[in-house]
Image (cartoon, rainbow over all chains, first blue to last red; front, side, top):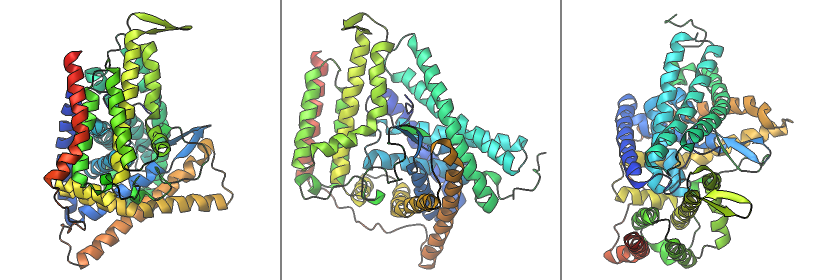
Length: 230
Length: 271
């Protein structure tokens, strides 16, 4: 059950719940579009397009974890750290929509649910955790790495918690075992989150060393400088 | 990190098909389904999927009807069954959940051989299995018969916000470059005697991702500058002018979803 929270297929969650979450997704993505446009203006389309292509490539880079099982990135934390919350949500949303419409991965009726979990919840929690952690941790290679690592774990677990919430609202009646299922899902996603965290932290520190101005979470400050908050 | 069941150690390849990401799962052809306007097919897919979701689980025969309609359409589009079955594997993580339901859900127990499972759990598992499979098949039908540009034109015809479509078009256009870059880096690592296995590869993988990000972002800025130099002000002329669909097209395309809706409504009323 490793990939439970991802790409929900047809009718795992009932109609009314799916509709409500589709509405939430539309509002959130619309809001992000307006906010991203404010920051980027006419650079939005080319930059967001290339950033989405990057998230797509990052997900495509699947690597063997154990015999017969391979993993790939979710990308919410990566997008949040490098691109910021608004652009990050847009990019992950476009990736999810492409996967549903062009690769039949995740049902069209569950598009709203998937966007809320993997794009909105994952990216915003990652950004929140990252912003908080960077206030406390030093802005060094290790500090940024640790902050991104924590943000990635929390974002993956939060995305799976989003699925649990949707399942509780409009899923199958599982009675007492809902608690056990929740524990199982959150537990597995902590493990998945650690994997995501290692890769994301490595990628973000690599960018932070070479081009700190491209890491949105650093807000243009170079790495070695001591943080202003300390 | 999403774990699926791809064979370990296989070279990195675009997800989906042997051809590039740019084409999605599109299979070129000239069937009536290929000729339908994309916007009609997208609406048809949404209606059909909703009908599948609304069919009560106890009406086992109704799922047979849905499957038969889809099989007929696949035959009409000349898409081989083997291709459909291989592509259906995307839903496999959820099949595990379907298999777990009979043991998880509480309710009156039934005995099958040596196993004791709950009856509502069996129904829940069947429900997930049937609906997820049919949903994937319906989505595959759209993906196989509509080129990427067509899907975008159809969405624009359906008043999807243009800014999202432009980002998507850009992403798809440049995805093959980015993916090729990732593949190239991996090959370069292999050529230098790297042995990517288990967790040891995480560091190299993360660093190449960082490099790819810098390259993508810089390319994005270059592309924007080139566009700005050619008078770009934030609006793109759409390359494929979306054409309207005739009433005949709408009627023809809505036949299959209409059958599905009728079956769903009838079973819901009688059960």
